[in-house]
Amino acid sequence: MTERWRALGVVDELKQKPLRQVTIDKVAIALSYRDGKFGAISGRCNHAGGPLGEGKLSDDGYIVCPWHHWMFHRETGEARPGIPAIVPRHDLREQDGMLYVNLDPATKRVQAPHPPHSLTRKEDRKPGPLRLLGISTTAMDEAYPRYSTSDDLLQVALASGTEAGADSKLIRLSALKFRHCEGYYSKSAHACTWPCSITQMDPKDELTEVFEHLVFWADAVLVATPIRWGGPSSLYVKMVERMNSLQNQITLHDRVLIRNKSAGFIITGGQDNVQAVAGQMLMFFGELGFHLPPFPFIAHSRGWSAEDMENNQSYVRQDETLRASASDLAKRCLTEAARLVN
Ligand code: FES
View (cartoon, rainbow, N blue to C red):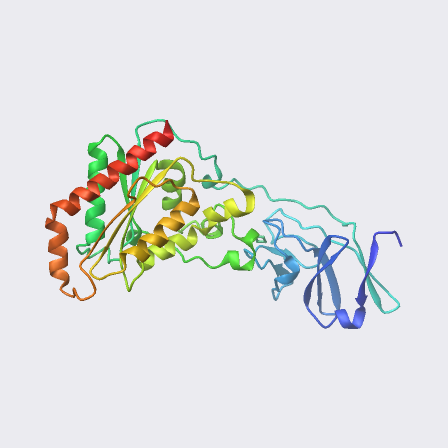
């Protein structure tokens, strides 16, 4: 035996578990046993390095990566037929009741060529006028839209941005179909990727539109939310959880995707808790890298006992001071963005 053969353990004991991850001399091995036969392939997935030996075995002998579910045959290391990708295979040998592995792989790692996701491009700003993005996070039935105080004030703000010479764009989360964050970060910080793992795996997921405009298009962003039971809207939270993929790049790779952009917030509620909602929005967007203009949010709430929603709506529709404050917020965000862009 060469120096690179290493003992894995007692054969009868190793037969007890269908799949395990073993690391010897810094070489990770996905060791499997099924139908009387051991298999050993690299324990490092081709995709983002997920621990293959901590995944699952499919009925037809493929190891399913625990991070994003790529599959490699447990004995050959080959991907599913039609995908020209290979994870290195390691030779095994039984001797005197012990199982040995050769740490030098018998085959080479092969990456299947695939075009990079459009969001992987460099986040250079395209020349042109300042760009103001509004994200409306109130939930409603798109087929039967209702009046929304937060959406109304956002539209006032965007119109003011257009008047000031900016390109303005409104994205309503209620019009997009997108999945919840499925907690890749909770598997491993490295399993939470940019672009977001779901964005990469599911071409039908429509949060791409938000990522595209937030990272590449906008110079200033206004996020509007109603207050629901003391917090921002459920759609806001759903979006923000997916944006963990942006923030995680800073934590893991010191890569700041949001640079030289400003953000402001519009918060309305029939009932109270403006300060708590503003606090978490300011914190999160600050953590992404956004700059805040002076007085970065406007809010409206008539308090805990104001259950008469119709009056709340007519107040927002008619109150000139509130509507002027939405316009002013847009202008402050654009002034800050102009300072950052130039
Ligand atoms: S599928 Fe294995 S790391 Fe993503």
